[in-house]
Amino acid sequence: MTISEMLSQSGLLTLLGMCVVFGFIIILIGCMKLLQVTVRALKLDKEETSNATANSSPAATQATSSQDLNVIAAIAAAVHDKELNS
Image 1 (cartoon, one colour):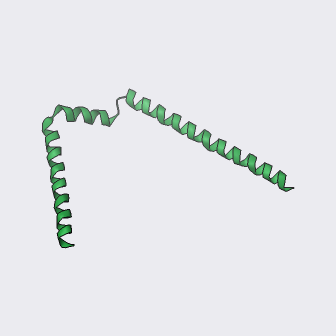
Image 2 (image 1 turned 90 degrees about the vertical axis):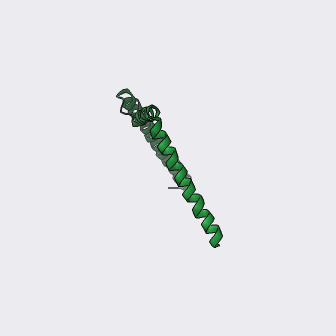
Image 3 (image 1 turned 120 degrees about the vertical axis):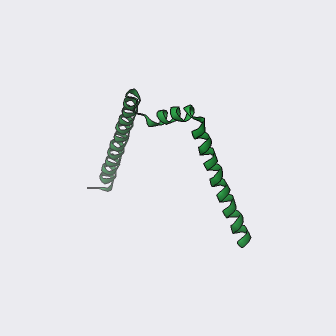
């Protein structure tokens, strides 16, 4: 087998491998889109449910924001303490 035949075969094998991978990715994307449509049609999407619950209770939103402020304050205190000790 000559070098040109070997290069020809390896090029063909490379193209075949890339086509297989590309085809698999297309099938995978199609299955994911189908799953997304199915989940939304059956209303199994938790994200939409949690958004509706958060909008209905402002007290829960206020508690979350106060927790966020507490975390920010703790981080700021730790950074300040670290700067003083350095």
